[in-house]
Figure 1: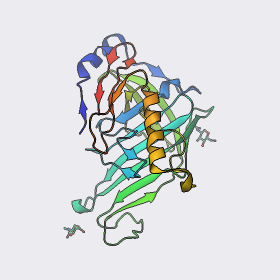
Figure 2 (figure 1 turned 45 degrees about the horizontal axis):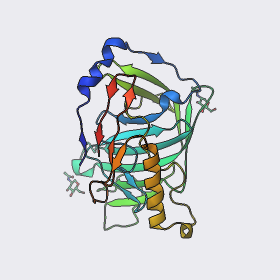
Figure 3 (figure 1 turned 180 degrees about the vertical axis):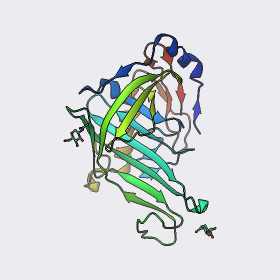
Length: 256
Ligand SMILES: *[C@@H]1O[C@H](CO)[C@@H](O)[C@H](O)[C@H]1NC(C)=O
Ligand SMILES: *[C@@H]1O[C@H](CO)[C@@H](O)[C@H](O)[C@H]1NC(C)=O
């Protein structure tokens, strides 16, 4: 389970001195850096969403999406989407998607995401077979597959959301439509290692060495803060207490 300290009270402080600021997209990644999550605050990139050692996607409590960006041009995407079926609610399609790779802010303000093809994964639950994706296994309604989808964001804006008192990232999708707004959750970002996790040459990597690689990468991201193991459970290996200053006003404490 995920416990999160209440951040609302400290964050509302921001609204007193930070009127909504608008920062136009220019070729500068600094403002994108961090882990962003949608309003449900349940989906975060990193080891809580995808376990690369056992290649497992882990279902969050509620649907939502999360993107992380590093200063040096890497990104990670975690999507938990639910498409309702207006006719038969038992036919809703759920998908969990993990991708990571590199991103580039183009001179015209668009952002292009290029995934590492070997690493993308999707778990699709389609109880009525209405997604049109052929299910290789008729006995189950969930199926797991590789996933590769490059993405272009037409543009984006980072602002301070006056109501929620949080940094907000508004992405405009390739066709100009609004993606659901994202809010800054972690800075530095919470991400899996940014290089290929599943090299095609499987022989070169054992589960153990991958586990060490993932762990080392996570520890390096948080080397200035405390990390400790507190639960032998498969998905709760890490406990982050990350105190991050955002705009000098907000202190975040996260417990995983
Ligand atoms: C920016 O350039 C890319 C690549 O040529 C293009 O696909 C995209 O639509 C352009 N964005 C805008 C806002 O014009
Ligand atoms: C809805 O879909 C489920 C699963 O396929 C099926 O068992 C059920 O009969 C459907 N209900 C209706 C009202 O169509």
